[in-house]
Image (cartoon, rainbow, N blue to C red; front, side, top):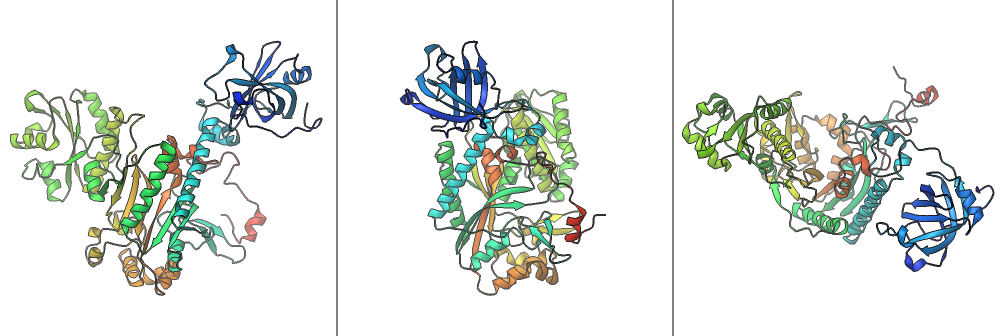
Length: 594
């Protein structure tokens, strides 16, 4: 029976709600046919909605009409059934389902909509190409695992809003159409129909707006906000993403740390049922790089790097001596119990680091008696060998890796080798406790070899450490920022800084970045002008919400926690965007495509 023939009744219960306490009640359920089993005299269907699954039984002696209609049912038909709840017969009891001790004897069936055969099963753990899933995302979203992810995302939204509201933060929406002020990535530009030849930009972040809100006297602001960056293609980036944006006035780093840690403690408890120990571990940028080869170290396993410059301070080995003289670094990684690695395995690892930009990989086996077996062993003194073994805490049967070169590049490569060895040695278990930490004292500037100029490592509104301001003109590479990142399981989930809040220091920052006074006025004049009207000291942080949800739900791709994501090439396969537009639309916008 279709809706054209009979008005359906609205549900009295969801498909995940009925229990033994409901036995004997008359109920109405609405949902999708998950599976159908025809046993001749009896027809069983599992009826599904986002709350769960309930088994429905069509028996000719109970309702011949409903049983006859049930013969036409197929997977994903949308139906409404009316019936009575009964205790399941013992042989059909299903304790793995919350509703598995009952079923519903159907006396009325309304087919609300038929369905074609879906391009993939509406089941968890399906072996289906991701492009197909994204093309039919509205079907993919019916799967319980995807719905679970989005429901948890919703829960994290609510926890976040409640937490900041209880701490006197005001949620304020900032514009989506704004002035183009590039902050590291390309802006998405929006042409103005009314103002010929002019463009809005979609915000890469609400950075300037939240600073203006501090100047406006809203001392505690937050927003769950969409941001847009036209970045080069990466496997796990989206052109549009969600931030939890936070800003506070009259604060220093410790106040922001305390506020953020409070939110994370709450999320740990509500989502993972874990008690987060506070305060969090804290590493400076330099410490994190030297010990883990990363400014977002994964501490779920105990591999660490050792700087060996002192061990080889007087070396005659040319490769090491040249790097020490040039201010480079010699860094080592100990792989416990890997001394039996074959030459082929070592060649694979050598190729791994070469592809990352290393000149090569030095390896040494620690043999019984403390002897070192290595291609370079003959170039080292006995004292250097013994100091190496002691410094890196090596034992017989271990393997030592050494890289040397410019400091940051070499440490980054060794950090990636550290992660690769953790993968090979299976050091990160499914039940490994999550590791959350702060990384602080980042360099204010980073040098770009291609353009031969400094860029802001975070953004141009980040305050330098006050004691380093005097170095901004003479030694910008030595200036540390009042910046900090929050790192969870080796992923940066939030980053922020204390901001510059006076016009003269902001001008000094622009000068160090090679931004002329005219360019600064054109791009950021509205902000620097506001500084002159009494800006309070302020700072904040922004969480990458998609990435944070991904980690909390245990997924490996942010696309699994976004309702309608785009592919790695920034395409929406479902609605075929970006797409062509008409010549008439382009004319209205004063645009011509060449």
